[in-house]
Amino acid sequence: IVDYFTNFLKLKPQGEILDGNIYVGTNWAQDAGVYEFTLGANGHRVKGRYTFIYIYEDGQWKISQHHSSVMPEEAKEQVINESEVRGLFQLWNSALATEDPVAVARRYAKNAVLLPTVSDVPRTDFELIKDYFVGFLKKQPQGEILESNVTIGKDWCQDAGIYEFTMGATGDKVKGRYSFVYVWEDYEWKISHHHSSVMPEAILGSSPKPAVNGRKSVVPVAKEVEEPEIESTESVEMSQ
Image 1: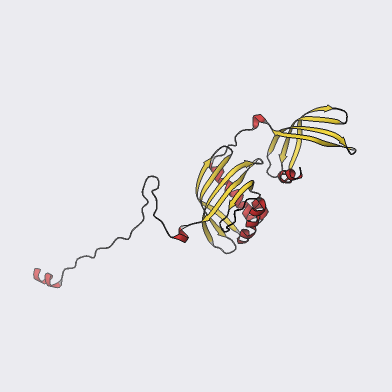
Image 2: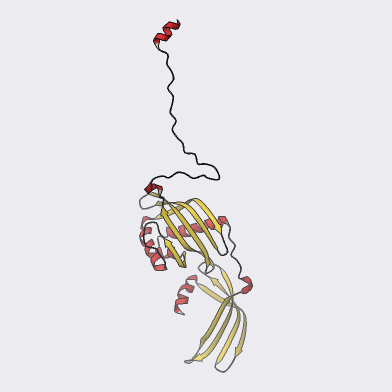
C-alpha cells in the first residue's frame, strides 16, 4: 500500500465524493459511489468508481477494503495529433532546463527504458535514469528538433528523427538521432522508450545517400573546367 501511494501522491491528488451510497452493519460500514480527483501536479480532473468497507479496529474506524476503478464509459482512447506529439518533447526539454535530475526522470514512465547518448548502460528504472541525468545536466543542455517523424497509435505515439543540443556550460552544439515512444500513464503522456545516439557518419565516415521520395539524392561533383584553346602567334601571322 505504501509503494502504491509513493507514486500516486506525486500527482498531488485531492478527492471529492460526487455520489455516495452508505450501508451500516455491526462494527462495519460501507460507502460506495463515484468520486473525482483533482491532480495538483498537472491540473487534470479524473472521475472514478469507489468502494470503501470500514471496520472498527483498535478503537477507530479503518479501511478494510478499498476498490477504485475508472469510469467504464469514459475509458476511451487518448486523442493526440502530430503537432501535439512533437510538443511532448518540450515537456522533456523544459525539465532539462530545471537542471534537476529528479524532474527529468519523472518525465519517464514506470517501466521506461532509456538508451542514452553517452553511457553504455541501459537505464531501466527511475533511479538509473536519474543517475544518468545527474552527469548530463552539468552540461546545461537545451535541445531543438531538426527533423521529426511522428507515428500515432492507441494510447501511444512515437517521435523519431534528429535533434541538436546546445550545451550551456561550454557553448558546444551536438547533433544526435533520437526516438521517443510515449504512453498514456497516470493521466499524462510519459516517455516509455528513449533512444539517443551520435550521428554515425561523424565517426565512421559518410555513406552513399539513399533515394528520397522516389528521387536520387544529388551529391554535387566538381566539374573539370576545359581550358580555352589559344591560337599560336605563328598561326595568327600566317592568317595575316
